[in-house]
Length: 167
Image (cartoon, rainbow, N blue to C red; front, top):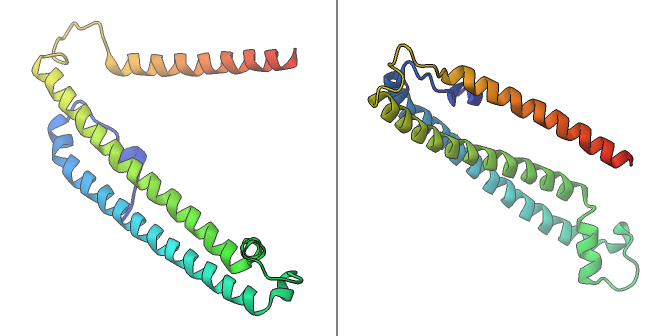
């Protein structure tokens, strides 16, 4: 299944009926993806726990191989586990899976917001907000203008911050 989040989240205000028809299938698509990512994260967590247990057993069987000299303490074993290559790999896999699960959950949340935006646009449409032929307000142009202003403000702020740091 292909996920084009940037495209799927967009709303065509000129086709609100089609957007509403498409919303449930988009929500289901991303909810299923979120569930799969959650499952992958849980599996990755389980693999991490297994890697920790295997590292613990391996270190206890051969503490000298992990530069543990003398008494084998829990602290020494815990430290050695953190350097055990299979544990490091499992830890990285878990972090990646957690990130993907978090992002998928955020996408589902964004589609909830999309639903709310559709509801608001339908209300505006019902109030004939978009039907006035001589309306001086173009929402698309105003949005683009606002985004340009944000970018300019950010550049100015970054420039001022750099000047302040040089002082």
